[in-house]
Length: 167
Image (tube, rainbow, N blue to C red; front, side, top):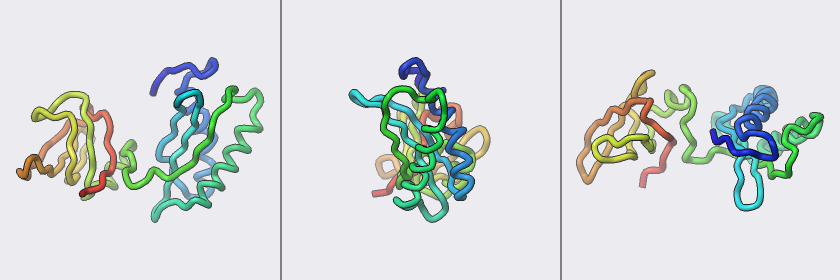
């Protein structure tokens, strides 16, 4: 997580505080926290919370969580996020990030995109079907220029992973 300053607070401390506040709300509704981020875009700060549940999350459910989280944030004194920001609660979408171990396990058999820190086979990104996941590596079936092959990627080399849409 970036260590940008946001009016005296680090981005990671804002995300940590929001995570602690939103998890009980989500647990009460049987929703899952997929990700949270606090980012500066242009002149504004955005607090984004991505939530999900089996079968997908609705707009109404996002609005309900937004209302409950806003109420919790507003009740804390001193304000945990003193500067102005926009709160966005949403679904992670079709290209949901893979962050937790359960995300990877649930993605086995699905089409994913993986970005790497260091090249493997002269590439820093791969898309393909996730065949298996272990604690140390994942194996994918990929198509490189018409050639189908399997690639094993060390987990420590994964910068980002997400579900992908196959065209």
